[in-house]
Every structure is written in structure tokens, then in C-alpha cells.
Length: 51
Image (cartoon, rainbow, N blue to C red; front, top):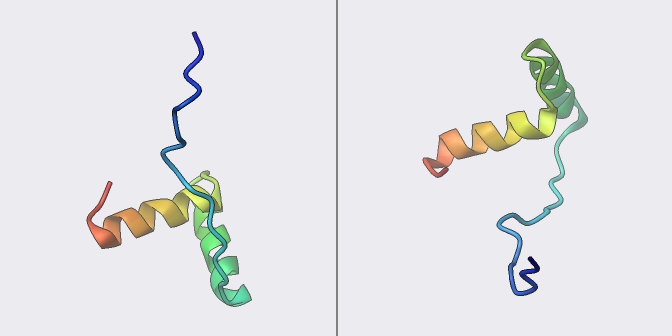
């Protein structure tokens, strides 16, 4: 089955963060054994009340 008109439900973005902040995020993600991108998405979802 092919569904050619389906559009992705997510969009890639570029986000500039201070290196020190990204380092802290990566440490937190490593402690939770999750990818740091997933941790950022989780935090943003919690803060905005969306999801």
C-alpha cells in the first residue's frame, strides 16, 4: 500500500544553544540513558503543555 499524499507529522529545526547548555543537556540525557534530542523534545513538550 502506498500513500503518497501523507506528510510528515514532524519538522526538523535548527536550534542554536550555548555549548555549556548543550553539554549539560547531554550529561542529563546520558544519566537517563536517552538521546539528548529526545530529552530536549520532552522538556519542550512539558513546558508548552503540548504533546
